Image 1 (cartoon, helix red, strand yellow):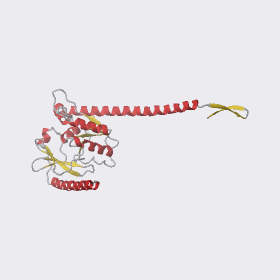
Image 2 (cartoon, rainbow, N blue to C red):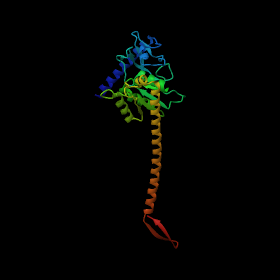
Image 3 (tube, helix red, strand yellow):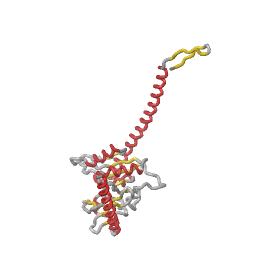
Image 4 (tube, one colour):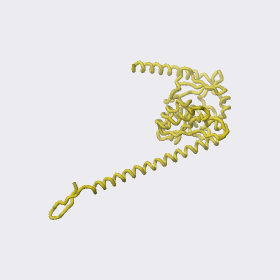
Length: 282
């Protein structure tokens, strides 16, 4: 039974790998767009990365990379914003990192050697949301593509950058019956030490993510909300660290006092020693 399952997974992975090679070859035949109606509608102000392509049907093609920085699939976005993933491609565990490097979205997936690491790394669901967050904060943003992928992506960056604060800038699906984005992010936060940042909208403002917030309230609102949330998180972490250190010191002091109390409580007897009375404990 276990062997059959292993064989099925191996065969499926081989199919994924073959499909990835096909998609990578297809991407080489596409051109790089200077801009796109989808990006314009989302208010994206910075140039599209060089590895983002334009298909013959006029769709944006965003490569999806695995934790080794290899392309595993593609997300296609039409001018009207409708999205689909390449058929037969592997989406699970896929990501795209938006950073100051405009060449591609895989640069920071593997930590660069000999370069200082960022103190903070952000994770979000969608590409346009990631672009807006990066424009506002100038921090690297990992796009997970959907809520179900947040856990795997966060886990990768926690392991790859152990000294970096990880923040999930979650979708706040507040207008839906189930707030999928928030619930998924909070489950990740419960499983590992990551911070969850939700966009806050005032009455009358519509939307669920930080790109929506940018369109409703401007880039400064995105910057302020995220920077404030990061500062509050770091303050809580520092406070917790101080409490933990104090707790350790108190525990050591309590152990010392307990030992002294036990020592005093030991019964004592008198023993004759060279004509003098001396005390011994037993």
